Each structure stands twice: as structure tokens, then as C-alpha cells.
Length: 214
Length: 204
Image (cartoon, rainbow over all chains, first blue to last red):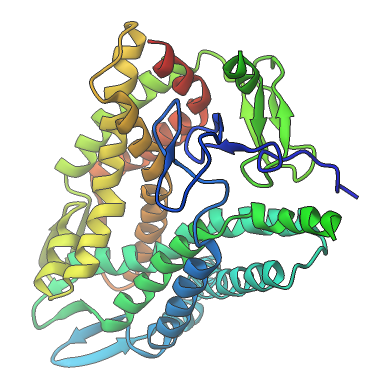
């Protein structure tokens, strides 16, 4: 199919990740020397270094933290000495019970759907690259772009907690305190953002090169 | 000679396929023939528009942080909050990590992004290049996904919905500045043409 596609890597060119300027890769890269972009000075790599290992490490860390993020309370509403812990899911349920369906849907999407889909899609992308899959290359690249762009929207809950904590601090009457679940959840969002950033979508297309060599 | 050849080409940053650059009309963009990623765009009057919108963002971000954001009234008690009160409160609750995160992605990074854009583009407009303009612009580009004001606004809406049933919430002038800030920043992002800024930084 696209076995004759001329990529920057095949032409021995390095495309700058920052400013997209093409650079020649001479003098040849040795293990410990780095080449920098002629325009913006960014370090150049044909592919992001250790892309798969870094993306896996960050994704696994995020998966582990995803469990306490959902079990531990993200915040506690303390009223007249009684604390009522809220998890991510119970927050969504409370919104549904208050008949705030659009907002409940928004929070469900941002705090539950997006992190799960993001973890699954990064794992799928990593596995598909490692098994040299040639299936639907273009769609997988689109999936990557979506994964990269959507991650930040999961931060809604963290900002919500910050605003609630700022407003509701009437000592005995009502106080809202952030819980350890919020820290875990914030870590999941940040780690998956870094994981998506570490993954190099060009690896998806590199299989077409290898296939033509075989 | 090689450099001119290289400047006539661009590699897709999603799939690495080489393309020959073409001159685009205003508002057109070039997409990768193999994976569909956007390669580059030609934006009309990019420098002036980005600069003016970023200047308005600068004014609005000050307003958003100085004036009260929301006022919470319950049983005769009144609690006023600034945009940054949440950060302070999280810190007092020994949630320092969360406080730093909210401070960074909600206020600090947007502010640094605005400063960075002004620092690089104002001198460019006057045909000059500011000191260390290239590393600063690289920093601005790196910050991009980490400035999350629009996400913050959704957090505000969710918090408002959660409180409005059992307390009186008065929206402060900061909130209007904040909404304005999100719009001007989004518009500045849409008009900013990184490709041509890099070109001009190289020439000047």
C-alpha cells in the first residue's frame, strides 16, 4: 500500500517536534550526542526517545492510581460536626438526584468516561504498535489526536473542589474539605496527559516501512 | 541550497510523511495526505490579531484575579471568594499538591502564556526580536495544553449548580472578566500562526 511513502525518517531528515522545521541528520547521531533544530534549538529526534517505555510507565502508574481515585473520597462536606464523604461517582449520583441531568452528564463524561477511554485508548495504541498491527492506521492516528486533546477536560472535578472549598467554609454550619481521592484523581489526569504526550504516533506508521523491508 | 530545499518541505508530525509546501490562501490549511493531520495554516493578519487579543487577555486576567469571584450567603453568613481563594484554602487543608496544581493550570500558566506571547510578539510587531525570544516562544508552545481556564470555568459551573439549591450565590465581576478572558485567549489561540512566528523569529 503505502510502502513507497517517503517519510522524513527514510529521507534521513529530522522533523523538529517544536517548530516543524526539517533538519538534515548529519553529522550522524551517535549514542551520546544530540542534534538541535537549526531554527528553534530544540533537541531533535527521529522518533520520541523511549516513547513506548515511557508511555507504558506513565499509563500503568495512572491505572494504579485510578483505583484509589474512585474509592477514596474526593471531598467531604462537614455540617454540624457530621462529615459526608463524596466520591467521584457519588457526586454524579447526587447531581442526578437533584435533577441536574445535563450537569450530571457533563461530570460523568469528564470524570469517568474520559479517564477510562483515555487509559484504554493509550493501552490499545501501545499494544497495536508493539504487535506491528497494520489495521486502520489512519483511524488509530485520529484516535491518538482525540486522546491527546481531550485529557485536560477531566480536570473539571478538581477545579470544582477548589471552588467549593473556597466558598463553603462556615466553620460549624458547613465546610467542604478536599479528600485524598482528589489528589489521586488529579495525578491520573496529569499522568495520562504525559503518557499521551510521550507516545509517538509516527510509530503507528513505521510498520508500513518494516513490512516493505520484509 | 540544502536549506532552501528543506524549507520547501514539511513532514507530518503525526505520521512523518514528507510533503511539499504550497502557498495557501487566507483561511486555508494543508492537511496530511496520509493521516489527515493539519500540517500548516495560513492565517490572515495573524500578528495584529493575536497581539491585540492577548493584550485584552492581559487586562482581563488581572480583573479576574483582583475582583471577587463569587459570594456565598447562607444563614446570615457571607463568604466572598477570589479566583485564588481555593488555592489558599486547599493549602490550608494540607492539600498542597492540589493547591499547586490548581494554581499552576488555572492561573499561573495562563498568565505566563500571556506574558510570553506579549514578550515575543510585541517586539516582532516593531520589527525587532526580544532577548531569548526563541526559548520563550518554545516555552509558550509547551505550556499550551497546560493552561486550562476553560476547564476551570466548567468547574465553576458545576460548583455553582451544587450550591445554588441551599445557599444564595452572587456572581462577582471577576467571573465576567474570567469568561471574557477565556474568549479572548481562545480567539488569540485561533489566530496565532506559530509557523509564521517561527519564520519571523528566524529572520529578525
